[in-house]
Structure formats: C-alpha cells, structure tokens
Image 1 (tube, rainbow, N blue to C red):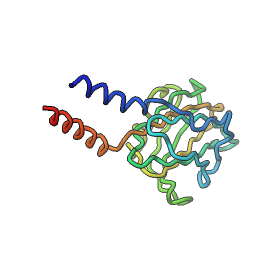
Image 2 (cartoon, one colour):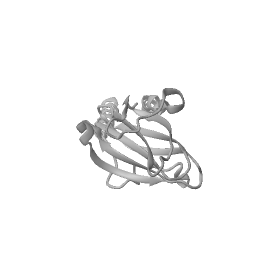
Image 3 (tube, one colour):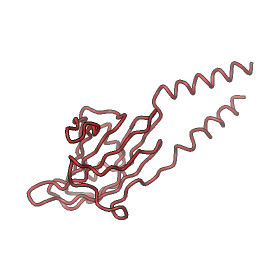
Image 4 (tube, rainbow, N blue to C red):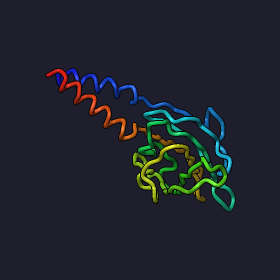
Length: 179
C-alpha cells in the first residue's frame, strides 16, 4: 500500500517538474527599459518559468530590463535561480523586486546584486528583505558599468503550504481508510 501511495504522489508532482521559457529577448524582443512600464510576461507557471535577457550599461548609468508577472493562485515564488550569466568576470548586475499591483507607485520588496560567481544560486533568498512572493510582482535587472551582460533566471513557483498540508491530510485519510 505504501508503495502505491508513493508512486501516486510521485506522479502527481511530476507534472510540475518541467521548465518553460516564458521570455527570451533573442526571440521575443527587448524587455522594457522603464521600471514604471515593465513588460508584462503573464502568469508564471507552477514549477519553473525561465526568463532570458541581456542588459547593456548606458553611458553614465545602468542598463535596465524591467518585467512584471503574476504568481498563480495557490502558489508562491519560492526561489529565483541565476542559471546563466556572462561575463563570468567583471561587471556587476543587480535586481530589485517590487509589487507591481500599485502601478508606477510599486512598493520595493527586496533587492540583490550578483555576478558570474553567483551562477547556480538562489538570488531571491539572498535578496535584502525578501524570501518569497505572492500575487503580482515585477523585477528590474540592471547592469552597472561593466560589459554587456547576458543572463538567465529560473523563477520557481511552488504550491502554497496549505496545499501541501491538504495533500498530506488526504494521504493520511486514504491510508487510515484502507486499514
């Protein structure tokens, strides 16, 4: 019985393991340079949503890519993994997360800086003042004075803890019912 339950749970969670590219600047066009008018990417997938882009430093300032998204009902943004970043040395990028539901008056939620040594790490967890997101949000990525930066981020959306609790309770009820 325990093996059947384990297999059933593995099958139930297998669908959320796939990753999907939701924006790639090479194919979908340039992301907005304006924090007050971010490109809207739509709703992130439950599981992994990939965003790829390139920021170019502006003369005397930072190059910017700004994009907004919705987090699906019943889920929350658990991590943002920097999966690719060039240049591997030199250049520094930074990102901020803000609540986009307020439009141009979006509330700052947190921020982080990163570089080539941060590939493979969760930069959401390392951001100042933020460990998860729900609802509508936006991200602004900036390149500060270094060479052009090409980057890839994995946005990992997981079911809210209440969903996991309900699934666990359902499993316990099914086991007790069989006895």
